[in-house]
Image (cartoon, rainbow, N blue to C red):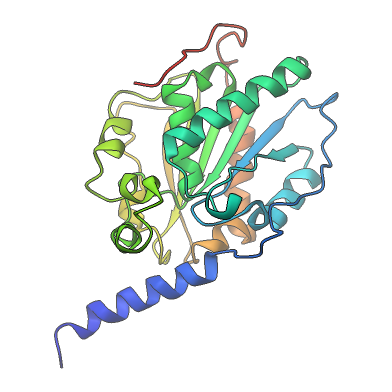
Length: 265
């Protein structure tokens, strides 16, 4: 048997999983606003991944609302103003600006939780760790997030890298990700990474966090499920909800009124 066949099959499975995850509906970022921000004790911000849209959160959003969370999302823009192709740091700045406007308009909003899928988890991580987001955020949950990069990003660099800086940021040898991993995660914010070994887009070895010496950082292996199923499977949601509840049971984050830094390191 040709020794290259097993490797080719693995890449075929990953590409099929990626194709099933991509949302190319041009209207998929048009969402109906259902959150009453005047009464928002447990807000949850949802951040979607590369070449995706807010529509991927429809099942997760329904479950969170049913369980008493105030859910909202941000249109992250990108290619054709819809497919989240901008740089991770650029989008993290956009998240910070949007969050600050929300708290300025609704100062009685409770402390924030963030759920980030795939690249969305890195956007949330950069915001919390580098842009003062720890002053707003109670907990950050990442789903299938390539904390150590994705091999599929090499394919993205060859095809989309000419207009998508985030493709270069997402490679396993990315200096950006190496810098982002440098330094401890804020100790008053919970960080949980959920992953599956059956995820054909983000390898579990990339999604698993090094939590040594950081009791507020954890990784959770889920049963076999695909990249998109992390947002829809009930057993994944049970872990997401448990992490959110644990965050609200923890100590209050730092005061929310402190000035935020104007630039990232």
